[in-house]
Picture 1 (cartoon, rainbow, N blue to C red):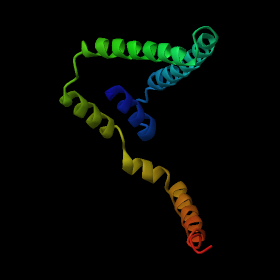
Picture 2 (picture 1 turned 180 degrees about the vertical axis):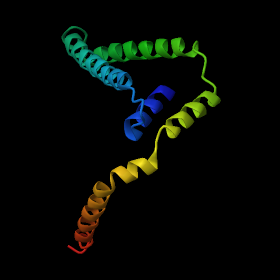
Picture 3 (picture 1 turned 180 degrees about the horizontal axis):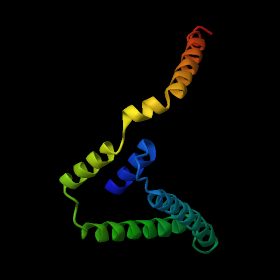
Picture 4 (picture 1 turned 60 degrees about the horizontal axis):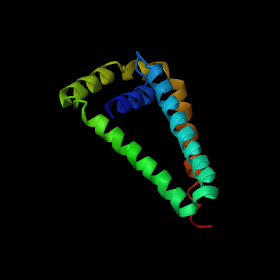
Length: 130
């Protein structure tokens, strides 16, 4: 959980030491999960002619429950990280961000985005009347 939080903080805050391998692991996990879901769907469809809809659904559900239970059991053996480590990591991430330098180097972009946002929001004020 904390690694996922650090990956998202690194992605959105963009500190100097951005970890791209964490993002790659996140996408790899998403692909594995979606591939497993598609595989389970085809397993269900393959079992329907042999054992029927209800039995096929029950067997795929049992397979998922057993897999989830095993993952939870194996995950319990890991020790939880202390909160001090999490706070220390968050402080390190925040220390890497230099807001003053970022604002000074992007003054024109910030002004243009503010102007564009103001124009767009002024055009949206009459949406509820129509």
